[in-house]
Image (cartoon, rainbow, N blue to C red; front, side):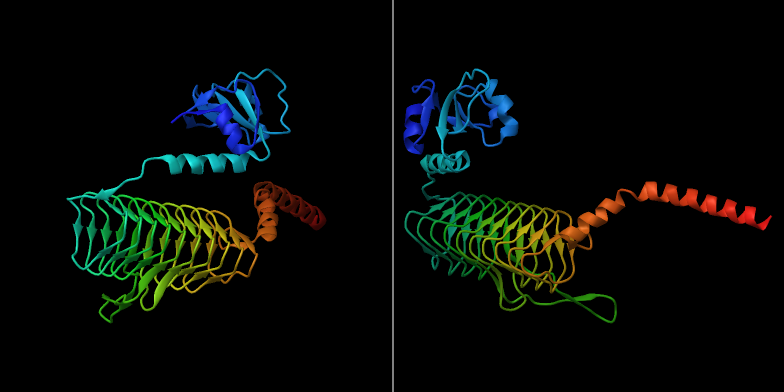
Amino acid sequence: MQFTAEMIAGLLNGEIVGDKEATVSTVSSIDGGKAGSLAYLTNPRYEQYIYTTEASIVLVDKTFEPKESVKATLIKVENVGECVLNLLEMYNAAKPRKKGISKLASIAESATVGEDCYIGDFAVVESGAKLGNNVQIYPQCYVGDKVVIGEGTKLYPGVKIYEGCVIGKNCILHAGAVIGADGFGFAPREDGTFAKIPQLGNVIIEDNVEIGANTCIDRAKTDSTIIHSGVKLDNLIQLGHNVEVGANTVMSAQVGIAGTSKVGANCFIAGQVGIADHVTIGNEVKIGSKSGIDKNVADGEIRFGYPALPGVQYHRSFAVFRQLPDMAYTLRNLEKSVKALQEANEK
């Protein structure tokens, strides 16, 4: 599908500088732009590339004034970031939608399938499962007994949802995500072996949640593991049994949260953060990458390091860490000087 500069400017209420008939069929970064692509300049550090890019059209802010000649057609808009997001959403919505139910899919007679659903090859929908309207289930997915999936939700290939779990509306689960596997619960015996603790709860995922590839969310021992609306989870995340994540919280890859911990709303948790069991994280908390949290964190706190410290304290400590080799060298010299003075006084 092709778009002209005139069409794009009309959609974005932008001003064209250059050829209004220039056409694009894809989007690219400004430093990697090719002919026929739409690029954008959101960060002034990348301005140098606007003079060399091969992109046919570039979105810029209305205040932008080039210092050199620009080969591409420019479209000046009020807010480049918002406009790019709008265009990407429009482009994504225009892509063909998967339709129909494959003859190779296995759907239990007691399952309920809503209108306009897509179910791909070798997908399995077990007894008592309920799929809302416009649900898309890609090949080789598994939907367990009595699972409920809300309308407009999409499961990419290989997603596994164990029995009794509930997925809300307009969610996206990427390839390999596992929802509702047993929590990691074992009781030690006197002979050194472990008895498995039955995990009898489920997982509840509310509306508009996105879950990355190969992320695992364990079912609760009792009650529910709960992911509230608007949460965005990256790839390769592990959430233990009875964990609760507040609305609109974002987590980067390889975060691990142990059982029964709670994370508040509107938090940002960077990559490889580890949170111990039975810890409560407040609302609007930010945690830096590779931090380890073993104690409760109050609303609005910023934490870094292992064990994690408040942000200002961590940065002050880090300033000292960097100076430790020089400080050790200075200390050794001082010790030598003190020793020399002592020896001189003894004579």
